Image 1 (cartoon, rainbow, N blue to C red):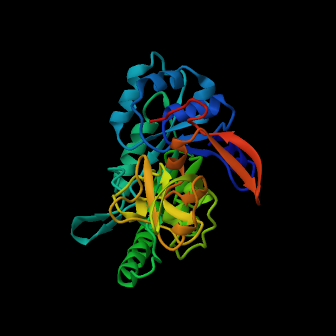
Image 2 (cartoon, rainbow, N blue to C red):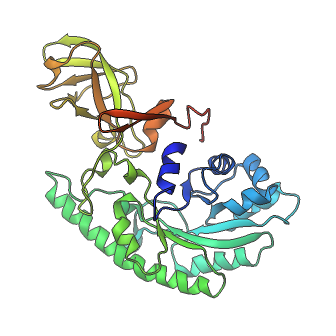
Length: 345
């Protein structure tokens, strides 16, 4: 939500936006939300690229992400002139490279070695119309994986070992990339981390900034980390519309399933009143969600049940507005992207 982004950027220590798409980045710049937006994923949106390359002010505020030369070719294919330089950052794979060619982590980038990264860096530096300004390394196998889930002690021990190995390996790889690129370009930033690995990423001497998006609202997937204690800050209230029988209450809607591997941790989490849980057979449904548990019989038609989403951003794709509270008082009602008439896919 633009209003929450503005609030975050107004706080000391917060700067810049890591965006999802180029259209989103251009909109944030046009709306005055930020004059420093890094698009976290490569783009082939030719219409948006035409807008970027024809506007010196937009091009100065937006950084594109690339991990191979073909993405630079797409940019050049839509512009008639290279007079407006395009800011570029390299997305370097930050997965754990285990023995036997095993890769643990998000399948984001082909840049898995310092040598491959520096080869692309040289291609960007030598190519007219582009300026290399940054590097991104997102260690999803550290930032996006809980390591203190109750009842899963053996698995959590493995997860923690993977995280420790990843961080040790990444420190060496980042240092090699940073040293090599320093001979080619003066970078504005070396980005790393996510909400689940802020402290670890910030401790790496090569890193100049960390990304902390979802953690600002603390969705359900961030409940079980050793590195921080969650303080949830985003909820959706759904009204009770049915009472099918003893021990069951049904709310309207609820099918706000998060992206990622399908499983219970991707479902919405009944939060208040306590004593409620999803059913095993129906879970959260598109049009209705039955709830069971000791709290179900206490619910009445029209009362609200409050849920937390598994992730932060996806919840607001279903709503036009969000109500901001201090204590039990609504202080402001703000538009989501959807409420502002925007859909960035």
